[in-house]
Amino acid sequence: MPLTTDLAAFLAPPAPEQSPLPPAAHPAPGVRLLRGVPYAHREGVRPLELDLWLPDGTHGPLPVVLYLHGGGWRAGTRTEMGPRFRHWSPHPFARLAQAGFAVASVDYRLSGEAVHPAQLDDTTAALGWLDARADEIGLDTRRTVAWGESAGAHLAALLALSAPLSGCVAWYGPTDLTTLPGQCPPGAYDASDPTTREALLIGAAIADAPDLARAASPVTHVHADAPPFLVLHGTEDALIPLAQGEQLAAALRQVGAGVDFRPVPGADHGWAGLADDEAERCFTASLAFAHACTASPLPPVNP
Image (cartoon, rainbow, N blue to C red; front, side, top):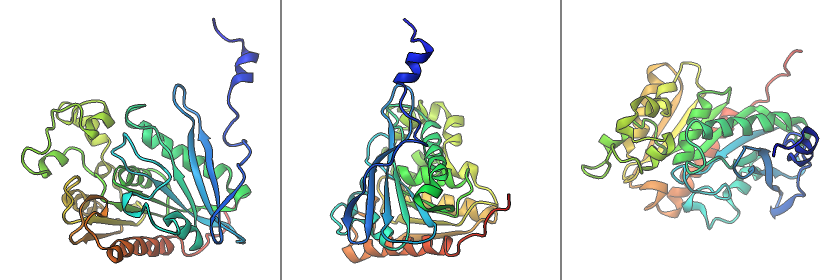
C-alpha cells in the first residue's frame, strides 16, 4: 500500500545538508574528527557517510582534501588511506589535518550496489555537501584537492576532470579500462570475463562493452582546463600496471594540462615492497603537492 504524503515525509531521513553534525572526537593532538557524517541518501542502499578530520583552533576557511578509498570499487573503507598506512600513528588523515587541511574521507556506492557512474555521482554529491556546509564548518571548498588510491584514484581523477577542483593526487589508479587487459601479463586478465573488478564496475565485460569502458576511463575525459595532477605509480605494480599511470600523464600533457608523473621504483600495488621511509616520501610528496595547489586563499566571489 502506498504511503500517504504526510507519513512519507515523516519517515524520510533528514536532509544531509541540514542534519546536526556529530560530536567531535580528538584522535590526535590538535585534531578534531567528526565520524560518520551522512552526506547523501540513495534509495535502497545504506546512507552514504564521510569522516571529517579538522585541525583544532584554526581561524579562516580551510583548504580541503576529499579522499577516496580503494578496494576495486567493491570493497574498502573510508577509515584508512590504504593498507600501507594502517599502522601509522598519528593516522595519515590526522597528519593532513595537522598540516592545515580539512579532510573529508568519503563513502561511495560499491559495484555490488550500483554501477558506474553511480560512484562518480556520489563523490560529486559529497563535494556538494561540503559546499553547502562550508560556512558552518569553516571550509574554503574552492581550494579542494581530490586524492585517492587504486579505485579511489580512478574516482578522484574522474571527479577532478568533471568538477572545478584545485588539484588531484592519484596513487596507482586505473585510468583506461579499455587498454588495461592488454597491459597485464599474458593470461592474467580476460577482457571477456564479466566478474573482473572493472566489469563489475560498468556492469559488463570490458570486451562486450567498450563504450561503457571508455566512458568510465579518466583518459577519455581529459581537457586543457583540468587542474594539476600528481600521479604516483609503482614500477612493479602487478595489479594495475605502470602503463596506466603513464597513459593518464600522456593524455593530460597532450591537451596542455599540468601533470607531475612519478614512477615509484620497486613499488607494487598499494606501495607493497617499499621501505617505510619510501612510503613516507610518497605521502609527503603528495602533501606538498596539495599545499602547492591550495597555497593562497581565493578572493571572495562577487555577488
